[in-house]
Image 1 (spheres, rainbow, N blue to C red):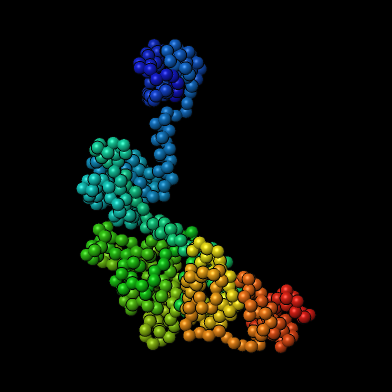
Image 2: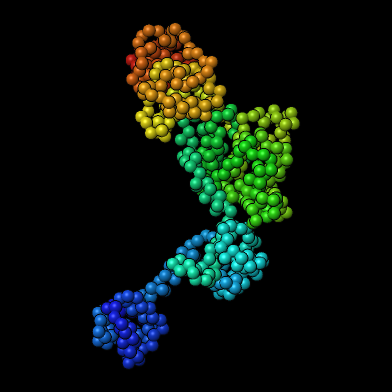
Length: 522
């Protein structure tokens, strides 16, 4: 039985308690002493004899209470530590200064196929088939990161020395080794990416029929575990769709890592995507480095601007897509991973393939599933919604109140062709909000060169619409009311007007009813 004695912090009190136990014929297996508590493990003590022992121990001056406990403090800490280590998915091994294993968690025992008893006192060098102990000694038993093989799997090894934190002058007594799978690091990178919070296709703004159709198609294709090719002009939001497709897939809990193929030269793009082996080149990290494909294992890799990939990397990527295997730069070992590829480009890959600028076999591998994101000029009805969103977000980032939007500005953003699409709109509106001084955005604030406001008289007669609206919402309602008032006599039914304006007839019916324009025919 284990017991706890509560008493005064008095010199000699523990010795007097031990004398009482000797007289009672009780042997102690373990003893721990703190300021006001004495903990004992007495194997021969049973519950019926506890009261008699308590009475005897209380004869010692300063002992106030005796009670039974389940574990001694050290036993409890050891059990808690064991539970923590067992819950870790990464293998953890502790060694002494001779490189002999002293502790290991369940993950380490499982991957090495050895029990805790068999691992204890086993040489680390022999387990890893590497002279790692000498390396640890040279580095004071502290290694920030190096690649190591354990149980036939590749890990990134991190080692920390074992020594009292409050007594740094004491010698190191060993090291704790943590073996991390590249996939777990990929998940960490993915989680730290602030752009990850897309919340799926529902967070992508767009209420036009064309956008609803493309989002619906993308959602269906996301469920299919096959390569996805996203086409569209620059600035249309291809990466946003790629992230949403990942979040809607069965791999949503796994890493999502992206590489811009146009942003890096061929050699850097190759090492980023495929990783490199130790000593692959002069400035290579000593232990090598896993690439995005390894870090994203079981997840998704997004290859943006895939049309800019060099012929050499096209061939290497094709081989990976065929069988899921590749070799690191400078390496000879075949590595196999389970990764879904989503690629995107603003170029005509089919035409490039037919003219020999892009590998035709790679094009067909990438183009198993595909979607095309429409440019902003083909979804003009979404422009007011997007503009208001970007204005509000810019104001929040800058820390100011969202400025009002004049009717002239609303007319401008609806008539402008937006060659840079959504990215151009976002950047121009951010700049306009940043420089806005009078609380209202006007056309000159966008600084769009060589573009004049439309002067269509039938849409903008002097009915009071030229006056400055008090807010963006008022300006939009003024514009809608003017539009429907002018067009309804030309198309005197909600269906005809809907067809002319390329929206649903229910939308037209709701707007006509809202603004009290004639009798609505549905």
